[in-house]
Image 1 (cartoon, rainbow, N blue to C red):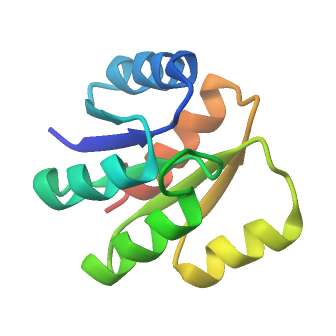
Image 2: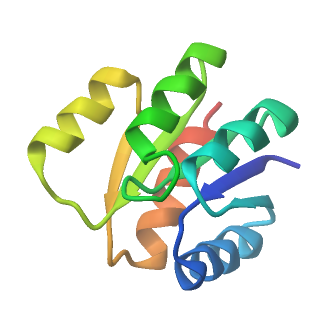
Length: 120
């Protein structure tokens, strides 16, 4: 069963994402900040990471950088309310595969998951 790591400091966002992912039959791992996301990525080696940008302790861009250094083939999708192009470009340059803007629709998450997990 494919595993997806959700990293977001907002519990309700994790809950919303978890429901969509579990409905797709995926195993879900949760992290409340970037540092925890990096730790869980190294321990669990998920198939996909959904990563928020604005988080305490370590932000999503820094977490993305560390994850990509750990595994350059990691599938990381940024999920953030920040629709700023500079941040999106920075994330993509660091190795993010895709970007979903909050508030998202469940279908957007399903499409991303199908693109990056179901196709591989």
